[in-house]
Length: 150
Image (cartoon, rainbow, N blue to C red; front, side):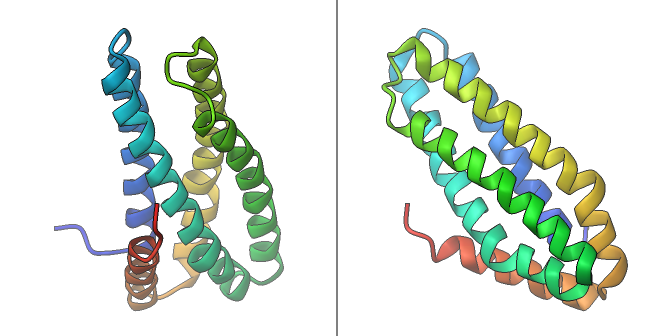
């Protein structure tokens, strides 16, 4: 059994978001199913982003000092672009061909953000915190997501 870490919780969310996108793509031609996956994606990304902003980024800043501040700043900047695209995505009808175009652009930006977190930010962070702190942050991250209405 894998121990509970902040990295595992964040990566699991990333995987869920990718699966929702893939399922949306597979539903081509079925507006109702595409709508279902689009709404699930919007909700999951909103919860994930908010939990990152309230739990993960402040922890980067606290435990990684100036490098953590730089990482958190970059991640927040990327999040702003993603939020703008998510807003466009949410306000465009699934039946509009632009919906898919916006979703593709959103995923391109999100995948770049994910790559940076998973290959750089999270490994550096896990190297400086204790397993107990990582588990505690993972729990807090999950709790933050549960408290976010979508």
